[in-house]
Image 1 (spheres, rainbow, N blue to C red):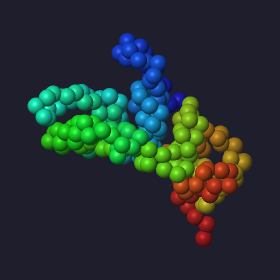
Image 2: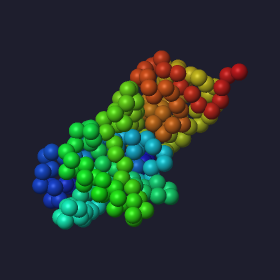
Image 3: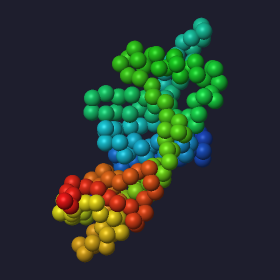
Image 4: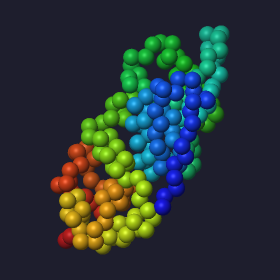
Length: 212
């Protein structure tokens, strides 16, 4: 069975807890505190990205100084890969931010660059492109609680198949692999498909071996 996700009590640390969202992260095994649905949607991309090994929200408070005044700033996320880390600010549209907020973000980017990192921007266009996010959310939230034996059986079946094959055919395969294991295989990219198109039963899936 996969490692359980730690349940977090946010009431003590966040006085406005009723406005927060808790994203159940399989990658970090904790609930990620998000301040908007857009931030929670961004977490789905981080779960899907194989380069990301760990991430957390509200990771650090920076003391910025410009125009002779000190200003506090906390990036929305810190993302760790195998060989570096960076921070992300999530906003619906960066073109609509006030000059004051933009100046804060530029100052933070400069400071983080001097420390060997950088600040990345993520907006609605990058987080919610076409059908991709809809597909990722469906696969992620329909693939919890997949046991190791169950997922191993799914992986072994995939290694024997010839592709392309439709999702309908795979779900009806006589080995009777459970749907949630197939959805996890899709989310973990053991199987691939056109992410720009909505996933349906007739969607063609691709894997390691192809019919000649």
